[in-house]
Length: 252
Image 1 (cartoon, one colour):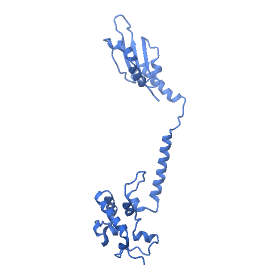
Image 2: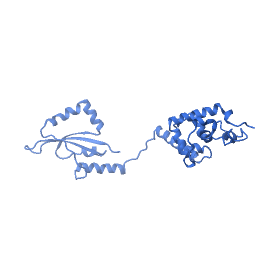
Image 3: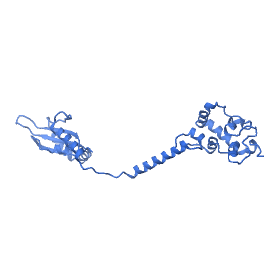
Image 4: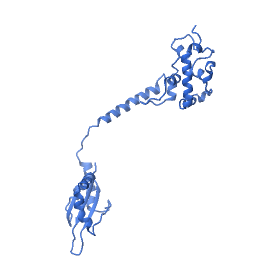
């Protein structure tokens, strides 16, 4: 892993007629520290900060500011960015050492955190759950509306769940489990949720417009996403539960 390095270098004048200068250079590699500490010709003073966190800590303590202040007061002090891969010996050496650290360094393993393990287990469990939901033989009407499994509830109330699943006081449901001898409504038609929501004379006050076969699924989705339609559906189901003896034909 590479770490950022900041370098402050004070170059003393090479002759009595030239002034010294201060350079702030940044190099993003772990090997920069080694390249910076090379004894380059003409450098009489240099300070190395190995990462930006340390640089910030120095600034907060005031130590680095005090050390850098004399250079800033000099008219010949400037900050310069050194472009990479253009022949600067320090940069090229740092890159070379960084590459060697990647290819020749000693590998080490870090244990994965507990949060990662929990995430992997959760992901695997949801994947198995989704596969069972897609390939199951029951709950197909609900699967059409909610095809993706999730730990978050869909937000349906009791009456809406009964209507969507068909698990309620419907003759079609009771007959399937041999709780009735037939599946007919008192009007003579099959007593399934769609019948009571669109055709049954006893539930006329809460009827919805009858959809075509191809739009039945979209029709149901629209009801479950509209607050007024959900209220009407809830009142319909409450009526069916309260008056099931009236709307369901006698079990004889």
